[in-house]
Image (cartoon, rainbow, N blue to C red; front, side, top):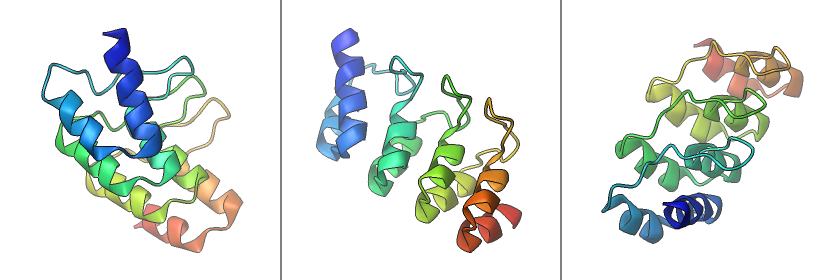
Length: 124
């Protein structure tokens, strides 16, 4: 199980869809976390791996889990200014309400960054 966890997190970090496909054939838990509480979806989101994130979501990865800092995949998409990924997460039903441990929601972070595309997306 530990090897599968490490492989999944590595695949998410580099966007390896082939490895994800191999891991998903088994009983892999797509919501495993690394030592800082990051899931594969969170890692893929931060790195801008749109196809990988889509594939995880199609396979049932959870949208609104939080890491040790309280960040969700949506909050991380905003922090990374990944507009396409933020849109994907919202279309899949990601909540805009969770706050991270700094008390900030995704819209608060988008506003701080001054990213109009993200602000409009989150206000819609």
